[in-house]
Length: 192
Image 1 (cartoon, one colour):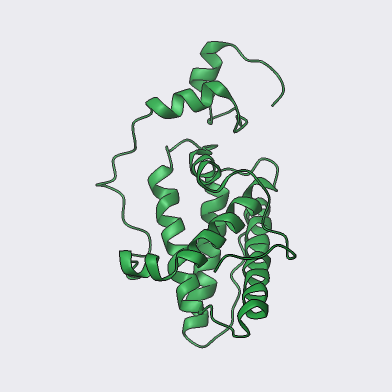
Image 2 (cartoon, helix red, strand yellow):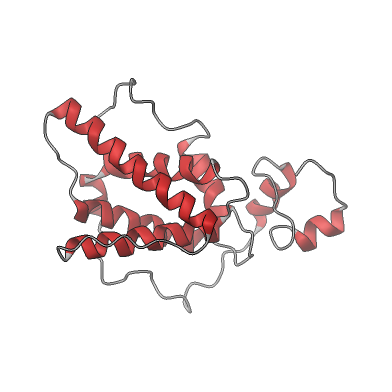
């Protein structure tokens, strides 16, 4: 959004009717003072999938790579918000759940923005697997591990979601953690 809006509209319509740019100084300041949503009433997404501290430590490289892939996928789609990311993550999780059962059935979101994000995540995961296989000579990324990391990002999305329809708090958190640079090019060395 390149237009200026009044302070009242900024306060009332921010991430409700106005899709704020991630670099808006007023949005960033507001996020520092926001209260998180009450989490007692919210169910933990995919509670049947255990994501422990040990799992995250064991899969640190995968977690970092998927974080960058997710960020790259989201910021490459104009107008994408947290709910689009949630829908894309849910579709990926459903797809990986079916893979665990021995079937291949790709779940696709109806939302075109979420579908684009999901497709880019899928391509990013495949590129990461290929890069890792070239570097190590083995296919070492298990579908079960990808599923666990996707579930963790889905839980993080819920934790950051502020309840506004156009919220981008999760995207902003990814951007702060993984930087706004694009995904690592294939010619760059991977740190594993």
